[in-house]
Image (cartoon, rainbow, N blue to C red; front, side, top):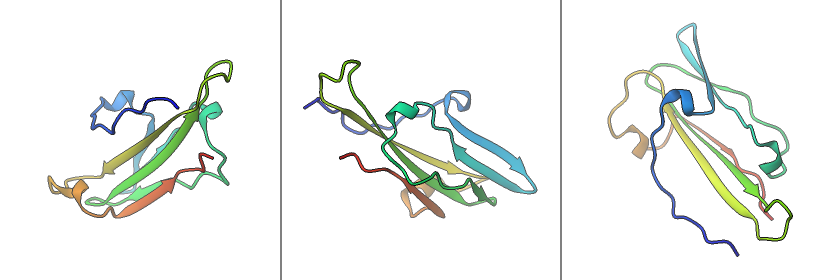
Length: 109
């Protein structure tokens, strides 16, 4: 079994985050991009993008799994959680229930 790292908080420059953000008609369209297709657990289909109005926020969760190059070692797993707000929100907004919650986690076997 591989050693796991405890969850941690991080903040990234927006250009380094793989989330598609588009603003139009007073709404923010949010859609996480998934690059490493080899790492996705089986999923039925990806949910559509979320459109937020000012003051709303979304929590979007995606999980991944990786094997070693030769498949000799155990699997490695990770969970990404994106908390994205549109417009001004209270400083503790992400501590409450989100306006929209997307659980895009697949089975890890």
